[in-house]
Image (cartoon, rainbow, N blue to C red; front, side):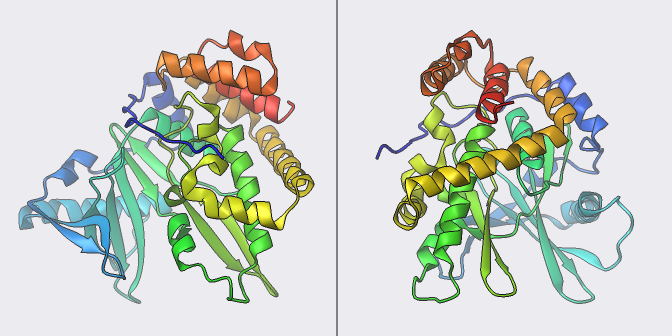
Length: 341
Protein backbone atom coordinates (compact mmCIF):
# COMPACT_ATOMS: atom_id res chain seq x y z
CA UNK A 1 0.00 0.00 0.00
CA UNK A 2 1.30 3.47 -0.88
CA UNK A 3 1.20 6.06 1.89
CA UNK A 4 0.86 9.80 1.60
CA UNK A 5 3.33 12.33 2.93
CA UNK A 6 2.77 16.06 3.10
CA UNK A 7 6.24 17.54 2.84
CA UNK A 8 5.76 21.27 3.06
CA UNK A 9 3.89 23.58 5.40
CA UNK A 10 0.91 25.17 3.72
CA UNK A 11 1.02 28.97 3.39
CA UNK A 12 -1.77 31.20 4.64
CA UNK A 13 -4.18 32.54 2.04
CA UNK A 14 -5.70 35.96 2.56
CA UNK A 15 -9.46 36.28 3.01
CA UNK A 16 -10.62 38.37 0.04
CA UNK A 17 -13.50 40.80 -0.32
CA UNK A 18 -15.93 38.25 -1.82
CA UNK A 19 -15.34 35.74 0.95
CA UNK A 20 -15.67 38.50 3.54
CA UNK A 21 -19.03 39.47 2.04
CA UNK A 22 -20.12 35.82 2.13
CA UNK A 23 -19.18 35.54 5.82
CA UNK A 24 -21.18 38.65 6.67
CA UNK A 25 -24.20 37.44 4.65
CA UNK A 26 -24.29 34.15 6.56
CA UNK A 27 -23.62 35.64 10.01
CA UNK A 28 -20.10 34.26 10.21
CA UNK A 29 -18.35 37.62 9.92
CA UNK A 30 -19.22 39.14 13.28
CA UNK A 31 -17.18 41.85 14.99
CA UNK A 32 -15.36 40.55 18.06
CA UNK A 33 -13.74 42.42 20.96
CA UNK A 34 -10.17 41.21 20.45
CA UNK A 35 -7.96 39.65 17.78
CA UNK A 36 -5.55 36.73 17.58
CA UNK A 37 -2.56 39.05 17.86
CA UNK A 38 -3.82 40.33 21.24
CA UNK A 39 -3.22 36.85 22.67
CA UNK A 40 0.41 36.84 21.54
CA UNK A 41 1.36 39.26 24.31
CA UNK A 42 2.09 36.45 26.78
CA UNK A 43 5.13 36.83 29.04
CA UNK A 44 5.89 33.14 29.39
CA UNK A 45 4.85 29.66 28.22
CA UNK A 46 4.76 26.64 30.52
CA UNK A 47 4.68 23.22 28.72
CA UNK A 48 1.68 21.06 29.61
CA UNK A 49 1.64 17.28 29.92
CA UNK A 50 -1.17 14.90 29.10
CA UNK A 51 -2.72 12.51 31.61
CA UNK A 52 0.11 10.02 30.98
CA UNK A 53 2.86 12.53 31.65
CA UNK A 54 3.79 13.02 27.99
CA UNK A 55 4.28 16.35 26.22
CA UNK A 56 0.83 17.49 25.08
CA UNK A 57 2.26 20.00 22.54
CA UNK A 58 0.26 22.68 24.40
CA UNK A 59 1.69 25.31 26.75
CA UNK A 60 -0.04 27.43 29.39
CA UNK A 61 0.19 31.09 28.34
CA UNK A 62 1.11 33.49 31.14
CA UNK A 63 0.11 37.17 30.91
CA UNK A 64 0.65 40.31 32.93
CA UNK A 65 -2.23 41.44 35.20
CA UNK A 66 -2.95 44.41 32.91
CA UNK A 67 -3.25 42.16 29.86
CA UNK A 68 -5.54 39.76 31.73
CA UNK A 69 -7.83 42.62 32.67
CA UNK A 70 -8.20 43.31 28.95
CA UNK A 71 -8.32 39.70 27.69
CA UNK A 72 -10.68 37.96 30.12
CA UNK A 73 -13.85 40.05 29.47
CA UNK A 74 -13.30 39.86 25.71
CA UNK A 75 -12.76 36.09 25.76
CA UNK A 76 -15.96 35.52 27.75
CA UNK A 77 -17.89 37.77 25.36
CA UNK A 78 -16.54 35.88 22.33
CA UNK A 79 -17.68 32.61 23.87
CA UNK A 80 -21.19 34.03 24.31
CA UNK A 81 -21.29 35.12 20.66
CA UNK A 82 -19.98 31.73 19.50
CA UNK A 83 -22.50 29.57 21.36
CA UNK A 84 -25.52 31.90 21.29
CA UNK A 85 -26.58 35.34 20.10
CA UNK A 86 -24.21 37.10 22.45
CA UNK A 87 -26.76 37.47 25.23
CA UNK A 88 -25.31 37.88 28.69
CA UNK A 89 -24.63 34.61 30.50
CA UNK A 90 -23.70 35.03 34.14
CA UNK A 91 -21.04 33.20 36.14
CA UNK A 92 -18.69 32.48 33.21
CA UNK A 93 -14.96 33.02 33.69
CA UNK A 94 -11.79 32.20 31.78
CA UNK A 95 -10.11 29.25 33.51
CA UNK A 96 -7.02 28.99 31.29
CA UNK A 97 -5.42 30.11 28.02
CA UNK A 98 -3.21 27.54 26.29
CA UNK A 99 -1.07 27.97 23.20
CA UNK A 100 0.14 25.46 20.61
CA UNK A 101 3.09 26.58 18.51
CA UNK A 102 2.73 23.62 16.15
CA UNK A 103 0.50 23.39 13.08
CA UNK A 104 -0.45 26.03 10.57
CA UNK A 105 -2.86 28.05 12.67
CA UNK A 106 -0.86 28.08 15.96
CA UNK A 107 -4.10 28.02 17.97
CA UNK A 108 -5.00 29.30 21.40
CA UNK A 109 -7.28 27.05 23.46
CA UNK A 110 -9.59 28.91 25.80
CA UNK A 111 -11.16 27.10 28.76
CA UNK A 112 -14.41 28.68 29.96
CA UNK A 113 -15.69 27.72 33.41
CA UNK A 114 -19.22 28.07 34.78
CA UNK A 115 -18.74 28.98 38.45
CA UNK A 116 -22.19 27.74 39.45
CA UNK A 117 -21.60 24.08 38.64
CA UNK A 118 -17.88 23.85 37.71
CA UNK A 119 -18.88 22.78 34.21
CA UNK A 120 -16.40 23.85 31.55
CA UNK A 121 -16.10 24.14 27.80
CA UNK A 122 -13.34 24.95 25.31
CA UNK A 123 -13.06 27.01 22.18
CA UNK A 124 -10.17 28.00 19.91
CA UNK A 125 -8.77 31.22 18.48
CA UNK A 126 -6.65 30.89 15.33
CA UNK A 127 -5.14 32.93 12.54
CA UNK A 128 -7.62 33.36 9.71
CA UNK A 129 -6.90 31.51 6.47
CA UNK A 130 -9.15 31.44 3.40
CA UNK A 131 -8.70 27.74 2.68
CA UNK A 132 -9.58 26.90 6.30
CA UNK A 133 -12.76 28.97 5.99
CA UNK A 134 -13.69 27.08 2.83
CA UNK A 135 -13.02 23.82 4.67
CA UNK A 136 -15.23 24.79 7.60
CA UNK A 137 -18.06 25.83 5.30
CA UNK A 138 -17.92 22.66 3.22
CA UNK A 139 -17.88 20.61 6.41
CA UNK A 140 -20.97 22.48 7.59
CA UNK A 141 -22.87 21.66 4.41
CA UNK A 142 -21.59 18.19 3.48
CA UNK A 143 -21.06 16.44 6.79
CA UNK A 144 -23.78 15.26 9.20
CA UNK A 145 -22.40 17.78 11.70
CA UNK A 146 -22.96 21.52 11.90
CA UNK A 147 -19.97 23.79 12.44
CA UNK A 148 -20.02 26.92 14.59
CA UNK A 149 -17.32 29.54 14.11
CA UNK A 150 -16.77 33.29 13.72
CA UNK A 151 -14.29 35.04 11.46
CA UNK A 152 -13.35 38.69 11.80
CA UNK A 153 -10.34 40.32 10.11
CA UNK A 154 -7.36 38.00 10.75
CA UNK A 155 -9.00 35.88 13.44
CA UNK A 156 -11.09 32.70 13.46
CA UNK A 157 -12.97 31.66 16.60
CA UNK A 158 -14.00 27.98 16.51
CA UNK A 159 -16.06 25.75 18.77
CA UNK A 160 -14.50 22.69 20.37
CA UNK A 161 -15.37 19.47 18.54
CA UNK A 162 -15.91 16.77 21.13
CA UNK A 163 -14.51 13.30 20.52
CA UNK A 164 -11.58 10.95 21.06
CA UNK A 165 -8.63 11.88 18.82
CA UNK A 166 -8.16 9.17 16.20
CA UNK A 167 -4.56 8.45 17.22
CA UNK A 168 -5.50 8.30 20.92
CA UNK A 169 -8.31 5.87 20.13
CA UNK A 170 -5.77 3.57 18.48
CA UNK A 171 -3.42 3.69 21.50
CA UNK A 172 -6.21 2.96 23.96
CA UNK A 173 -7.98 0.38 21.81
CA UNK A 174 -8.75 -2.93 23.49
CA UNK A 175 -10.47 -5.48 21.26
CA UNK A 176 -11.52 -7.46 24.33
CA UNK A 177 -13.92 -4.73 25.43
CA UNK A 178 -17.37 -6.14 24.56
CA UNK A 179 -18.91 -2.70 23.99
CA UNK A 180 -16.65 -1.89 21.03
CA UNK A 181 -18.50 -2.54 17.77
CA UNK A 182 -15.69 -2.93 15.26
CA UNK A 183 -17.97 -3.41 12.27
CA UNK A 184 -19.70 -0.09 12.88
CA UNK A 185 -16.35 1.66 13.38
CA UNK A 186 -15.04 0.22 10.10
CA UNK A 187 -18.22 1.27 8.30
CA UNK A 188 -17.87 4.83 9.59
CA UNK A 189 -14.25 5.04 8.40
CA UNK A 190 -15.33 3.98 4.91
CA UNK A 191 -18.02 6.67 4.88
CA UNK A 192 -15.63 9.28 6.29
CA UNK A 193 -13.13 8.39 3.57
CA UNK A 194 -15.75 9.12 0.93
CA UNK A 195 -16.85 12.42 2.50
CA UNK A 196 -13.28 13.70 2.49
CA UNK A 197 -12.71 12.71 -1.13
CA UNK A 198 -15.93 14.23 -2.46
CA UNK A 199 -15.21 17.67 -0.98
CA UNK A 200 -11.38 17.38 -1.37
CA UNK A 201 -10.38 17.68 2.29
CA UNK A 202 -6.79 16.60 2.75
CA UNK A 203 -4.43 15.64 5.58
CA UNK A 204 -6.94 13.51 7.47
CA UNK A 205 -4.33 11.63 9.45
CA UNK A 206 -5.54 10.06 12.70
CA UNK A 207 -4.67 13.08 14.84
CA UNK A 208 -6.72 15.38 12.59
CA UNK A 209 -10.05 13.65 13.24
CA UNK A 210 -11.93 12.46 16.30
CA UNK A 211 -14.09 9.43 17.05
CA UNK A 212 -17.45 10.40 18.50
CA UNK A 213 -18.81 7.50 20.55
CA UNK A 214 -22.57 7.47 21.24
CA UNK A 215 -24.37 4.95 23.41
CA UNK A 216 -27.52 3.75 21.67
CA UNK A 217 -30.11 1.78 23.64
CA UNK A 218 -28.49 -1.58 22.85
CA UNK A 219 -25.17 -0.80 21.12
CA UNK A 220 -22.39 1.72 20.50
CA UNK A 221 -22.56 4.05 17.50
CA UNK A 222 -19.57 5.85 15.98
CA UNK A 223 -19.06 8.96 13.93
CA UNK A 224 -15.75 10.29 12.64
CA UNK A 225 -15.43 14.08 12.56
CA UNK A 226 -12.67 16.12 10.97
CA UNK A 227 -11.13 18.72 13.28
CA UNK A 228 -8.53 20.27 10.96
CA UNK A 229 -9.54 22.05 7.76
CA UNK A 230 -6.29 23.74 6.68
CA UNK A 231 -5.75 21.36 3.77
CA UNK A 232 -9.02 22.07 1.97
CA UNK A 233 -8.46 21.73 -1.79
CA UNK A 234 -4.76 22.54 -1.48
CA UNK A 235 -2.69 19.47 -2.34
CA UNK A 236 -1.88 18.35 -5.86
CA UNK A 237 -2.27 14.58 -5.48
CA UNK A 238 -5.70 13.01 -5.31
CA UNK A 239 -4.65 10.36 -2.76
CA UNK A 240 -3.99 13.14 -0.24
CA UNK A 241 -7.79 13.50 -0.08
CA UNK A 242 -8.33 9.83 0.77
CA UNK A 243 -7.69 9.00 4.48
CA UNK A 244 -7.19 5.33 3.54
CA UNK A 245 -3.75 6.14 2.10
CA UNK A 246 -2.17 7.52 5.28
CA UNK A 247 0.05 5.21 7.30
CA UNK A 248 -1.27 6.87 10.47
CA UNK A 249 -4.69 5.38 9.59
CA UNK A 250 -3.52 1.83 8.92
CA UNK A 251 -5.43 0.60 12.01
CA UNK A 252 -8.75 1.77 10.53
CA UNK A 253 -7.85 0.55 7.03
CA UNK A 254 -7.02 -2.95 8.27
CA UNK A 255 -10.21 -2.95 10.32
CA UNK A 256 -12.25 -2.28 7.18
CA UNK A 257 -10.31 -4.80 5.09
CA UNK A 258 -10.72 -7.51 7.74
CA UNK A 259 -14.38 -6.98 8.58
CA UNK A 260 -15.98 -6.26 5.23
CA UNK A 261 -15.84 -7.48 1.67
CA UNK A 262 -15.16 -5.13 -1.23
CA UNK A 263 -18.83 -5.34 -2.23
CA UNK A 264 -19.88 -4.21 1.26
CA UNK A 265 -17.46 -1.28 1.21
CA UNK A 266 -18.80 -0.27 -2.19
CA UNK A 267 -22.33 -0.36 -0.79
CA UNK A 268 -21.28 2.07 1.98
CA UNK A 269 -19.62 4.34 -0.58
CA UNK A 270 -22.87 4.51 -2.54
CA UNK A 271 -24.86 5.05 0.63
CA UNK A 272 -22.66 7.97 1.67
CA UNK A 273 -22.74 9.48 -1.84
CA UNK A 274 -26.52 9.42 -1.70
CA UNK A 275 -26.49 11.30 1.62
CA UNK A 276 -23.96 13.81 0.28
CA UNK A 277 -26.11 14.38 -2.78
CA UNK A 278 -29.16 15.10 -0.60
CA UNK A 279 -27.14 17.56 1.47
CA UNK A 280 -25.89 19.28 -1.67
CA UNK A 281 -29.39 19.64 -3.07
CA UNK A 282 -30.64 20.96 0.29
CA UNK A 283 -27.97 23.68 0.33
CA UNK A 284 -27.37 24.08 -3.41
CA UNK A 285 -27.56 27.87 -3.46
CA UNK A 286 -25.09 28.33 -0.60
CA UNK A 287 -22.64 25.71 -1.88
CA UNK A 288 -22.70 27.05 -5.44
CA UNK A 289 -22.21 30.58 -4.11
CA UNK A 290 -19.22 29.41 -2.07
CA UNK A 291 -17.65 27.51 -4.97
CA UNK A 292 -18.06 30.53 -7.25
CA UNK A 293 -15.99 32.50 -4.72
CA UNK A 294 -13.35 29.75 -4.66
CA UNK A 295 -13.15 29.90 -8.46
CA UNK A 296 -12.07 33.53 -8.23
CA UNK A 297 -9.66 32.91 -5.37
CA UNK A 298 -6.21 31.37 -5.07
CA UNK A 299 -5.97 28.58 -2.51
CA UNK A 300 -3.30 26.35 -4.06
CA UNK A 301 -0.12 26.73 -6.15
CA UNK A 302 -0.61 26.51 -9.91
CA UNK A 303 1.52 23.37 -10.22
CA UNK A 304 -0.64 21.65 -7.58
CA UNK A 305 -3.78 22.52 -9.54
CA UNK A 306 -2.23 21.25 -12.76
CA UNK A 307 -1.18 17.95 -11.22
CA UNK A 308 -4.47 17.36 -9.40
CA UNK A 309 -6.64 17.85 -12.46
CA UNK A 310 -4.36 15.54 -14.45
CA UNK A 311 -4.61 12.82 -11.79
CA UNK A 312 -8.39 13.17 -11.47
CA UNK A 313 -8.80 13.04 -15.24
CA UNK A 314 -7.01 9.68 -15.20
CA UNK A 315 -8.83 8.46 -12.09
CA UNK A 316 -12.28 9.15 -13.52
CA UNK A 317 -11.24 8.64 -17.15
CA UNK A 318 -12.78 12.06 -17.71
CA UNK A 319 -10.73 14.47 -19.89
CA UNK A 320 -12.94 17.42 -18.89
CA UNK A 321 -10.90 17.74 -15.67
CA UNK A 322 -8.00 18.94 -17.82
CA UNK A 323 -10.12 21.91 -18.88
CA UNK A 324 -10.47 23.22 -15.30
CA UNK A 325 -8.82 26.61 -14.90
CA UNK A 326 -8.41 26.66 -11.11
CA UNK A 327 -8.94 24.73 -7.88
CA UNK A 328 -12.52 25.95 -7.56
CA UNK A 329 -13.45 24.41 -10.91
CA UNK A 330 -11.64 21.18 -9.98
CA UNK A 331 -13.57 21.00 -6.72
CA UNK A 332 -16.88 21.69 -8.44
CA UNK A 333 -16.32 19.05 -11.12
CA UNK A 334 -15.16 16.50 -8.54
CA UNK A 335 -18.31 17.01 -6.46
CA UNK A 336 -20.61 16.76 -9.47
CA UNK A 337 -18.78 13.77 -10.94
CA UNK A 338 -18.59 11.82 -7.71
CA UNK A 339 -22.21 12.52 -6.79
CA UNK A 340 -23.51 12.20 -10.38
CA UNK A 341 -25.10 15.64 -10.30
